[in-house]
Image (tube, rainbow, N blue to C red; front, side):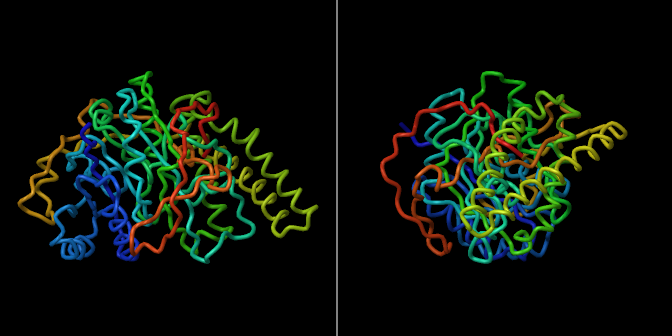
Length: 405
């Protein structure tokens, strides 16, 4: 069988992450399942666009292009989709590196034509060298990583995490691209969740669609030192509450909060119990972790209350901004002789779409819980791991809670 063509899109916006971007690209170029192409989409930063264009001018599989839509991650991803030519389109955060079998793990489930999206596991790489003693694993979604509480293996979910994700091209043909007006915009308040909104829209249009997470599709996500502090933890959980209010307002509380019920009634109480148990066993950080879980719930609830009032007063409107091939082709690329494949996106008649959440829903459990050992990373990424043992967990299971924030 002919291997699937996979285009990889990496959206970038700041020169402060220069080394991280180079490491991300290197990890994709070292994949056991080679990418058809790597697209670096620069978000309204001419200096970074010029620098990356020069960096990769001799590298045929890497193309650099400017975001052809409004500022923000959604339009950047849509630009990458419009410029891509692969049957599958994968997304990798600009401050993450993928393990060698990342794309192979993505490709395998697409043998089932009902599968429209596959996500993977995101492991944190703490700038300080280790997890802060107070930081509960149940809240790793705060730093864009997989959290404690999801089962191992290949799991059917409601939505996947955008920084470690892949979609069949037909998914975008069906519902358009990512909606602008939600999601991250540079260093502004960390709300986001454009991938969740897209997945909800996809599920509404195709109720039989299958969205999966395979926890063997692993990336290692850098956590900046500023995000290791409680101040960011509090800000991020509050922003999550705001996002949840928008979701509930748009799709109803039953749909908007369906995955959070299991998280708040099972996963978090279990985390508090573990923290209390660690206190009794004189293990460091038990009380702090239990307290952080309580604080995270309270700040998220506060954000939800404020967001609910705002949504009722102001309403919610998000749009998929059309980006076509002609627009993208007008931008500079690394190889001017390389034609841009793929199709335009947007233009689906969607002018208002439900908002979303920044989520760890589509992530999977930590390696400690699953017993998985990660595959080798690309050279120069600074990530090392051991090759996995034979793992029969290719059977898809359904996770009733589907995830959390």
